[in-house]
Image 1 (tube, one colour):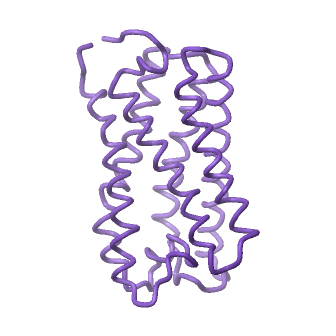
Image 2 (tube, rainbow, N blue to C red):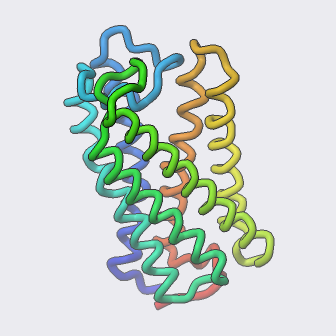
Amino acid sequence: MRRTMIHWLGLTGVLALLSYTAAVVFSALAYPGYNWMAQAVSDLSAEAAPSRQLWNQLAAPYNICGVVCATCAALFVSQKRVGARLFRVGIYLFMAMNWVSAVGYGMFPLADGGKEIASFQEIMHMAVTALVVLLSIAALVCLIIAGCREKTMRGIGLWAAAALALMMVGSIGTGIVPPEYFGIVERSSVFAAVGFNAVLGVYLFHGFKKAGGIEHG
């Protein structure tokens, strides 16, 4: 297969995962008293957080690469007509989620981590989170169903099922686990989306041959 620029841009998904992981791990070191087991990832990037500057530096590639990867994947499956319509809708929804996440969290960061949600900015931050979760679930469900219907889509459908399972652990777990373990289950949810974007990027790098069983280019 002759790879073009859009194939190589799939690797931005892997770069986004590496950047996000580095930001989560190392920004915590710049936040005195931060408890990763109890606190949310978003506390690290809150406006008043001492780790905000380091977070912005380490997460800069993630902020751009995540959107680039998902957008390129959506363009590719649209132009090449990869899979059935439901499969492509799933990719489009996942792209929309990445755009909402990048723009929404950029416009409405938390003012101060670990505090009561009261201001307009904080309420909008939670609204963005709700929309991101809904779009993520809708996208992954579409891809799972597409994987069940089409044998050639089974691989990416299984990845989507794994991501959805982790996301459900995070969404449900944050409401039932003791507060001291909130951060653990919350991370399973956020890393599910970032990790699936990396998987999507690898499929794009291979021209979705692993998903659609066809040769492009």
